[in-house]
Image (cartoon, rainbow, N blue to C red; front, side):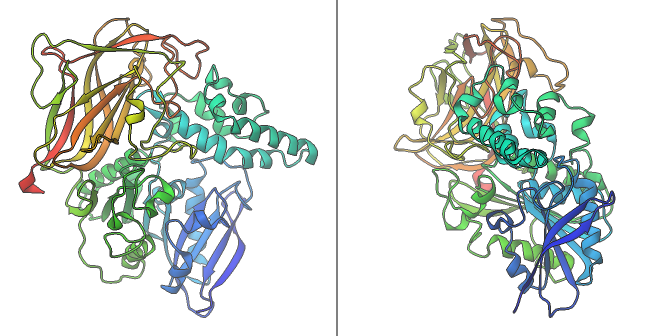
Length: 579
């Protein structure tokens, strides 16, 4: 088959702005269904545009593939306003694609990360020609993308807004400047971004060089730093709260070690709740692999742990790759092909390294089981006794515990996923709570949280929790984690709750979710500390946000685990007989 690639095909939006796309099609074929992929990262970058689906194979399977630069990016015209533009532009792009002579009027939208957001945004607008979407690892709420229980996602912000988007946004914003001046400013920005360790330690963070030393060149930077609580500005740019407007089948693909796992689960929960409350059956599927973000979906390893051949997006469960997986979904809704019955939820169970079908998420059969933190550093399902002593550590924000693994989106010097934490264990600014070796497998599948009683000598504190799997030889691999900023512990972020130093306060900390079998001979371990830097901004201890603080204050942190203050991790345990 000869495949025609038409480059920079123009598509006019409702306001007259022209976007451009590459169109992959069979010139000998008649009108066909269209798969739409919209990107802010350059439609000609193969590492990006082939990540979820191979467009050549899609054409061979009877589709036309449209890969479009979003507004203000690549060769498309206009000014890039992240998230906000994708709603109306998504609608217009779907309807434009459906109206072309090579299209049969049916369109599907897909993509990973921001590309997945564009699929959701189009679906929210309900264009008549859209038949199904397949978003993977996609944002849901703009506030939640950069704030987690009060802590600023510094690593995600600096990596995406500054390092990925910033340089090209600067060049575009300075197109009318003299070439020499434009080039000098570009090189200055690159030099600043290359000094990453220095950059993230700026005091205050709002004054970090790429945000403060230039005339504005990317409004998203200032907007993110300004909007620190949920508001209309952020909700207008979010899919969250608008799932009821989606009228097409949805296939959500997520990763246990992905920075956007909580977003994908929020998408699924909103869609499943919406479907359950209506008479119209709207198919929604959820697949969760053991993956880190983006290209990590093609790997069998999520960090330093290899989950085997079945895990890789190149050979999912030894049956299909990501391209076949997507085409199978779109064949059902854009070609009306017969489709074998599939479970609404499919998860990869780490530890035993197998895929498993489920009927819902979270699993109804999970039994929430507390494992308690004891004064001797042990972790067990037995409740602590009267007189159990608290444990303490000193936290110095000038020497924070460094980021090591986890669900991150950061420069490559910071490894993602399940990474052995042992190199941190010699530090004095953390506590470990470790179980005895397990006698039998223990499956933990579902959302995980920690109830923590703690005090600090400072006016504010962060509480960082990591659940780890300790292998028999002693390596302790991160499974999932969470953070809460004490002064922002209220569910209403608009109302900070200042701390009184030394008061014992109860916290609830969300560790997202996992599916993990802790094997016999392994131990569970909970790491408690006050920083995960530069994934999150440092808590200065002064009562200010890290974005504003010019000074740092050390603190003594105390964790309680006694009969009155029963700190524990709440695990969704799957009984062996019901797996």
